[in-house]
Image 1: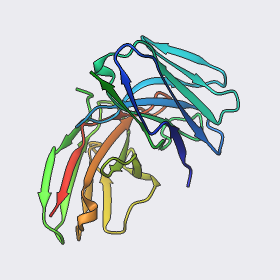
Image 2: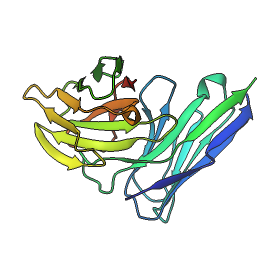
Image 3: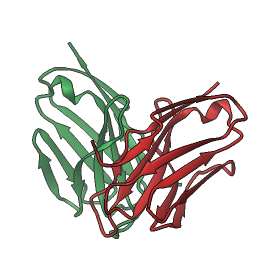
Length: 113
Length: 113
């Protein structure tokens, strides 16, 4: 089935560093979503992207919809302890609502004190 | 509080037993999705309901079933439980014409012993 591959699988960084992660697919997606999951909680939507080439920010987070529509990137600037968690990319295969989402394999972010 | 309510939060049961997980979607959302997340794994889509009708089916075992009731709450039934069914089970909901992704509940952690 459809698979979204995320890299890196895990990251260990120091507070204040910038973070970059990406998500790739063998198929085209029309929407890219980035979620964050904290321990014991469900994923929370961070950023949604709807157009190839689109660059969208949410505070210190910036995400881009790749121009090939087969990839997306998430950057976090000046990381802080509350950024710890697992970051998932996700996408539906159409632009209509009510589509099931395919989730990526996740990038686990750990901040070293 | 995301607005999606899942009960119970934790469940411990023995192999061979049957359990029911419950989900109340966010007010106004017609779609409910069930996902399974095993230890340190990504989110695997199980099944989707829209306004009471099954809409899409993923990697859901025959021992598992779900339904959505007229008041839009949903139940996921897991029977003949095996040790490997231990996982976090998430419910998510979305509005009928939304492109903004899902809202997840906090999950039910099922432990089969």
